[in-house]
Every structure is written in structure tokens, then in C-alpha cells.
Amino acid sequence: MIIDTHCHLVHEKYDDIEQLRADSIALGVGHCISQGTHPQDWLPQLELARRMPDFITSCLAAHPSEVTNVSDDDFEYMAQLCRQHPQAAIGEAGLDYFWDAPEGWDEAVYHARQRELLEKHFALAEELGLNISLHTRDKEGTACFDDAFAIARNFPKVRPVFHCFIGTQAQAHSVFEQLDGMISFTGIITFKKTKDVQAVAAWAPLDRVMVETDSPFLSPEPHRGKLNIPGRTRFVAEKLAALRGISLEEVAAATTANACRFFRLPQLAV
Image 1 (cartoon, rainbow, N blue to C red):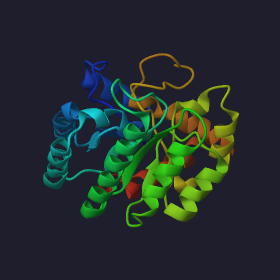
Image 2 (image 1 turned 180 degrees about the vertical axis):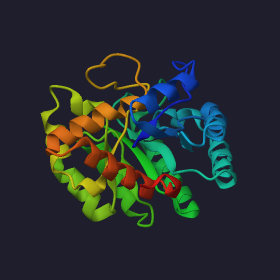
Image 3 (image 1 turned 180 degrees about the horizontal axis):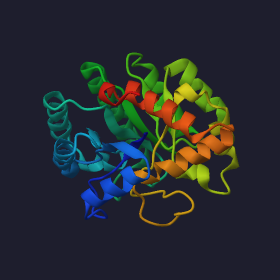
Image 4 (image 1 turned 120 degrees about the vertical axis):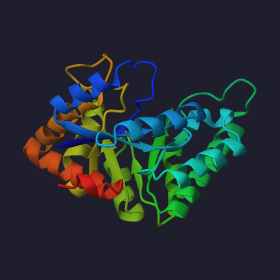
């Protein structure tokens, strides 16, 4: 079995979750971690996980692009939901310096607000004994990764996974050695012009790696540009196996075991 460790199933592009589930299971993907991003999807995330506990586990957080729409009261509401309804992790939280600040916001203030909110997510994860799923995206340079890394170092009890990892081998090594963290690969590793991240995928210790789709986005080859589903984690796992010169079964077993440990899913452990 393969686990999709990062997807967004509460999304307007999905109108038949039952069919999505059937299609994903047919491809060998038996479970997925659906990640929250904003106040409007927190309760639907919980409801999906309640309806399909064998297929979906939820995480809640505020995506960095939502910081101008998330008040302190909103965050406390989310925190209470996490206290009342056990989550797999806190996610998807993080930093995003790729997009310009919204109209009326100074860029420095916008980025500072993101960092403030990320620290609150880490503190909540520490309180609840959970790990955290991190989004980091830079327009140029490494400021976003560096800032998220610095915040993570202040919370040694919380293990981060840098989702949709497209960084360097040196960055990955620092995540493993200094944060006891993980990295997760998406369909990006199946794209032709991603040799650098493919090299990281071939090198990274297998016990530090997970696979994901980031559905409904980033559909892998040969489905690039189409609506993505958790089932296509299989294509990510197949590419990871090819890059490492090992079998799909080895990748599936290792990444599933990693996901079960990181997201505390003992009922799925193999």
C-alpha cells in the first residue's frame, strides 16, 4: 500500500469523493492525509475524515497565503478543533514569499505575519505532541526556507516534513541532521526538467522520505496538467523507485512506514 501524505480533498474541483477513493485504491493508494488551509475547510476536513476513516486522515492549519484572512480568534478556533478532534499533524502551515503581498499590505509586514503565524502553529503542535507539515516557497533565493528552518529549530520536539520538496541536497541534509525532519516528493520529480530535485530524491536516505500528490495540483507524468487525485501517488513512487534503482514495493513499504511513524498511524503500519 502507498500513502499520499499531502493532498487537499476539500476542494471545489472534487465532486465525487467516493469515486476518487475507488480510483485511488485501484492504483494501490490506500490512504491519504488531507490537509487544511483556511477556516472554511476546517470543519469539512473533519467531516471527510469522520466519513472515511479507512481512507482519509485530516490535518488542520492556516496556509501562509491565508494569513491576511485568519484572525487570532480564527486560529484559536482551529486550535480548539485540534484539541477536540485528534489530528495526524498540524498542516498545511508554513511560509510563502513567492507571491507579492496583498493590496494594502507592506511586504515586510506580510512576511512577518506569516512567521508569527508559523510560530503559533509550531507551538500548537508542541502542545498536542504532533508533527507539522510545512509549505515553503521562495520567489528567488532561500529566505523562505531559511526562515522556516530557523523557526523549526526553536521547537525541537516537533518534527517537520518539508512538503513538495524542491530544495538542494544541502538543505535536505540540514533538515535531516539538525531538525530530525523529513522531506516529501510530489509529481514534480516525474517532470523532465527537474534533474536537481531528482538527484536529491535518488540520494536522500529512504527512511527520511515520503511521497504525495498535493492533489488537486501537480499531477505527475503521464497525467501532467490534468486534475490530480491521491491515486497518482503511485507514479511518484514509481519514479522514486526508478531513480534509486529499487523496486516499487520497496519504496511503497518504506514510505508507508515513514508516514505511519510521522503521522502516528499505527493502524496502517506494515
